[in-house]
Image (cartoon, rainbow, N blue to C red; front, side, top):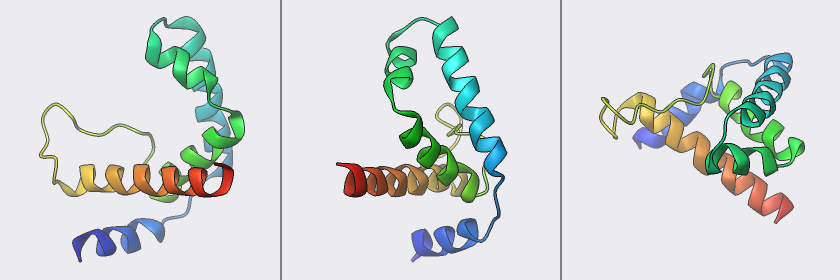
Length: 98
């Protein structure tokens, strides 16, 4: 029940499409500057799929993808929102683009 309530509240927020494009540009620039496997893997994701994922982040009312993995409870409202975003965007991309 809580997960459904979280999704309803978060989905009501408007987002800025220009912000999505800016976040994708930042991701590509940072992955080129920073080394490491995560940066490399992020750079390999198509721009279309990144746009979908970042659109979900902004649609849910978050400014950036940044779950609280160090100090917060895994069950906090903030972390639950991140979980919902991850699941929905992953399901959307795999269902529609295999």
